[in-house]
Picture 1: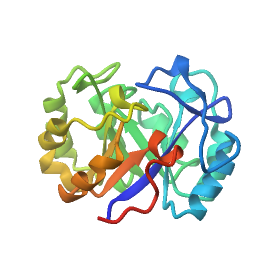
Picture 2 (picture 1 turned 120 degrees about the vertical axis):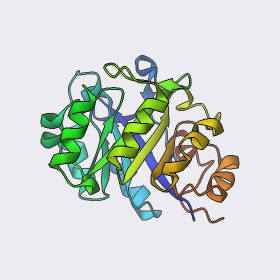
Picture 3 (picture 1 turned 45 degrees about the vertical axis):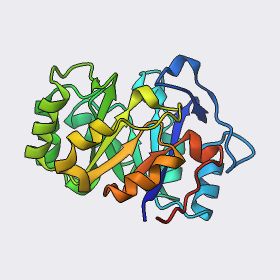
Picture 4 (picture 1 turned 90 degrees about the vertical axis):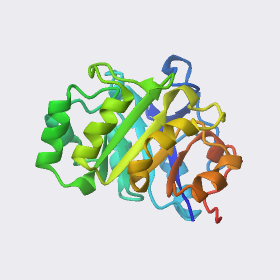
Length: 231
């Protein structure tokens, strides 16, 4: 059984949707799980329908234009939150521990590899998820000058419990995941969580290939993919 982890992007206290990581064009989320875009209402329904945890990206924090931490803290009492808050270093990681069960350290915003090692040296691996952000099949980062292959070697050395492979180019597009990228991370397959354009048709194949968890946003909220899929 593959676990479907719901995705919510928050902006200005509501859930929003968009494509390919273009945050300037995000609009209020229309979800079958709620009659409105209030994230608390959506998460209540997701929990009732079998969700075990939820991935939340606080786009305001990531863009440094405010935050949605009050909503996130409420949601974390309902479902364990995997939070992407634009963490860049050890200090910011420590701050956000009060708001979510697990914190995502994403290559997009990480300040340096040194800070990543500091985080793993200081906190339990159970609270840390590394997100390998990928755009146009390359490692996407504001600060880290490594290739995707070079960063993978660093991950093997760090040995996180969980690693997200997030194909930013495919977010909200339903165009599927790049299979070559998955294959290149075969050494870390047991740790992988896939995200970005996951389609219903490919979930069966991903499950057969040993993927245990996927992040699903648009296809879940539209009803194309359900929370409980058995293969």
